[in-house]
Length: 247
Image (cartoon, rainbow, N blue to C red):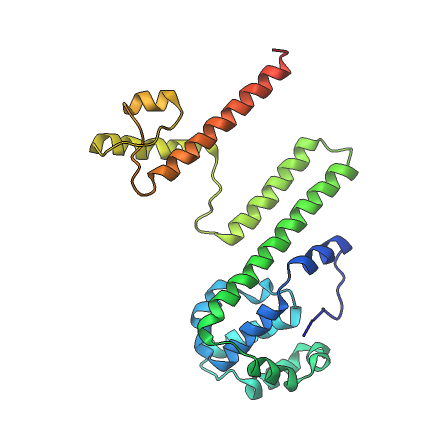
């Protein structure tokens, strides 16, 4: 069943990106799994929140179900029906209790709930990233009064906000100097430990300092790959500086 919000006042470009990445089937499947087995909230509820849903009513209903489970109440079509009636006209427009029964009837095994939650959250991140990039692109084209650098800086912050939302306690985006310092510290520890060395970093000053290569064990190759990328970025900056100075 295809669901479209009854009243959507967002800009047209946001609606267009939403249609590309929304997965309402996954949202309905998750609600069905939750009604079939309330224990599905133990894992799925940690991966996704109502605000991550594309269909507003389903997101609202998901949070009401979460509250019921937290209070020790049973979540199934009959008990959820009374709560859903407080969600406005959308509930009746979707079919009322028949809508809940249909989701329960088509519910996947509760063990699949985390996968549906991950798909919902993935779509949410894609929508927000597309919206941020679209806003940035529109500003670059339409706002000629602001320096492009300022607009790009705003875009970078918007992208970082999406990244932080995806992993608020362990964001993968760090400043290059910080990443390099962390990598050098790890490599120094490896050099002192006398482990077998493997991959070159490509940064001669670092390789000389360690008297060799980075250990190929476990995650060390990942560190080397990051340093390769840092070196390439530095090379690009030096090339741009040379061009700017007429070399």
